[in-house]
Image (cartoon, rainbow, N blue to C red; front, side, top):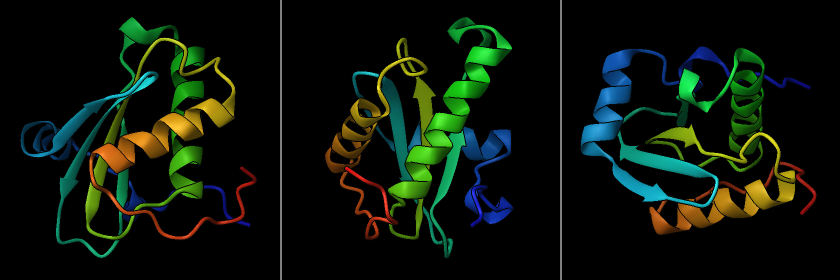
Length: 121
């Protein structure tokens, strides 16, 4: 079973992040700020922006792994770029709380989700 996001499923370049910030819809959830921008690409993409203000590298990397896991289990419909900025508690809160926060943010941003891929809820 593949646990990584392929390159076409990732927002990777600075201009792509800036487009999401400027043209996308924004929602402040309890543990994250999420931007969603519609695009014409054949896959949903994820970008995670955890700055040094969030914590040391170990904490930032754990937050990125958790964000990728959320995205992998609750993948949006194709044609959307999501950018997640983790907030305090993102790296330590129970994963189920993150799932609830993530799904409510997607609903607020009017992003539809493909059927669950085996995530126990």
